Amino acid sequence: MLTREDAIAMENCSSDALNALCKSAAALRDQTWSTTMTYSRKVFIPLTNMCRDTCSYCTFVQHPDSGKANIMGREKILAEVLQGQKVGCKEVLFSLGEKPEKRYRYAKDWLATLGHSTMVDYLTEACEMVLSKSLMIPHVNAGTLTYDELKQLKSVSGSMGMMLECSSDRLMKKGMPHFGCPDKVPSVRLKTLHDAGLLDIPFTTGILIGIGETWEERIDSLLAINELHLAHGHIQEVIVQNFRAKPGTAMENANEPDVNDMRKTLAVARLLLHPSISLQAPPNLEEDYVAYIGSGINDWGGISPVTKDFINPERAWPQIESIASTCANLGYQLQERLTVYPRYLKAPTRYLTPRLQNAMPSWRSDGLAKDQHVSTQLTCGA
Ligand code: SF4
Image (cartoon, rainbow, N blue to C red; front, side, top):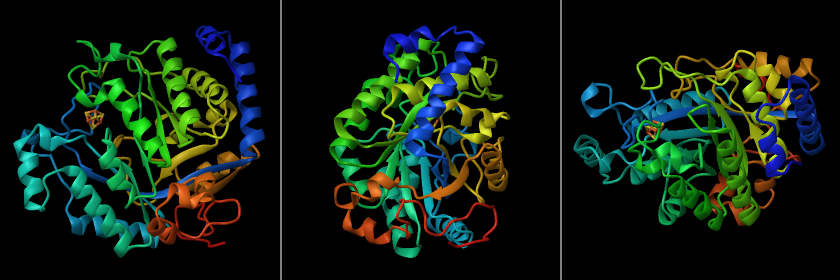
């Protein structure tokens, strides 16, 4: 394990020191997670691409005047969910912009035609529909939420998520990526993580690297997450995501973190965070994603055989078969997990409502999915 000072001292480490750091991180991963690498087979539902925030790197968000702003209707949601179910998906990842109805009349009026006054209420109805009309489990990624909103959504979802991104207020300043984004105020995001802990919600969070934060701020963001986990035990996974510059955004010419920056951040994360927290990095945002295995990750996140990554639509997920063979070449086995990690599944009365416990797809004694799919096609059930 590392101290804050040790971690900060790694900022400009030599390549030998980086290799040694990664080796320690990979060893700790092996000790806790063995040779199993996991992913969650999911359908990605972008419930709305409208958002009251305007992060400088975002291409997901659409202004109501763009002609591309959308709120997905019930029929389309259900059709996507059932298509995913046919090919073995078990998780429905609802991802959406934050509270567009508080900023745009257009969003408010659209929601009214759906019979709702808030996006959280429509999301709750959509999750309810997934639970009653499919065999899949919702994972909700709705950004900052109040205690009451989290409680409402816990009754219709297995787990939830929200990237902390960065705990520094500096990124809120003029000229920085979160300027004018009320939902990116770090204390607001930390409050959501705290309230999720009070409610025993299995929670996913993480950091977004390369958006203007310093190395020290990156370390402090990881430590803030860890502190919340030590207090509540609810952080099931931490994602380290690398910023990618996208044409048409205010940050289109900004430098992107390279693979060694990702290796270093992943290794430090593995050694700073409690070992029971799953460490994840997305395989579709770095060509050399194989290097992540040697840096201490144990999970690739949600991968869909049917829907694209709507947040990074230009970057297709690698085929699940190719991730499986990449893992196998290094002595690791790709296995399918559920949206709720084994440790939380095994303490169901604390973390899941009775309805969610009953709805959960079958799982093995190790807490991973009983019905395993490690290919893009529907090929096997174990
Ligand atoms: S909060 Fe999310 S959806 Fe909204 S602008 Fe920022 S990155 Fe985009």
